[in-house]
Image (cartoon, rainbow, N blue to C red):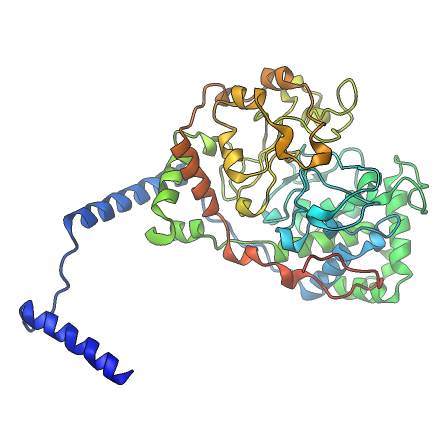
Length: 458
């Protein structure tokens, strides 16, 4: 090795000697074409930063710290099947660490099923109405769910139509809207509660407070949970707590472990021109310009938190709308506004590369196809091929093209992107992935207080 290094050193010296020696050693200037490319890259980077600032694409702040005891409780509850009617599914069954907090299906498969992720199947072929959204960066969101059922109003009060929280319950929520979110899947028969076979299923759908009380009764029968709750909420007795304390623990844990703010894009915003590839820089420029993407995907999360109809075909079981109940009217379900028919919340784009399929019903299975569907959306919707879906969903495409186009966002009516621009925007979206989000295995506990099995794909 020493001989090799000496040879290399002598070779370098010889090269310098042959090229002329001086007391000042100056690296040769790069060729003109490289200098030009570097200058063009720097100019493009400066332009992208300026356009990003104008669109509010600022750095995302880290979530506030969460006390350890609350995190311990929240993680246990999120993975514990004790919260489901027949003790066969946990919250995290549909938000698997291996699949970047999704389940890999177009629309989720809830209670009564077996298997995990892509292999999960219900004996009756049942699906839940919508795609299981990822859990990334929910600390920065005030409106949750695809149709905005759980939200914080302008006065800062968390609301949840259909299962309203008591003032005493809202007072418990420390981490914003996400603290309320885990309180609702446990109410759904298809998601967690089941239609029969347990004491929760016997409660009427119009009695959410009673369901939550029964869940706390279950948890209170497990001594370890009493200890965990009282450690997480010092000075309070478990017997005086409500299920809002459980929801808050899960929500705060989600914000604590799934907040990711160190993507190549973040490093680029911090001043590193080489954090993005040339294709990603071009993609960012198109995203902010000709693609019109930033008109809705803006702010630190790349979401305006509003609702838009972006011409996604309707597949899956639907949400009870339309003549046969297999349609999903989206935001209109909450507002009654016909102009919001088929409108869904703008999804955040951080770590989007990791979370296929895409859309409220997962109708589009690849990231590039998702970008491409915005271009010539009339043609794409009319020509949608359900063959890309898993077999049980291929026959569920609804004949709703005309209705979707009638309320489609007007900005999409004439939008056309070249294949090269679609490629570049797709590459840019990959720059929104925080490397730490690629492996979430450390968040999964080995055991939970109930002793029930923990769902996890190794």
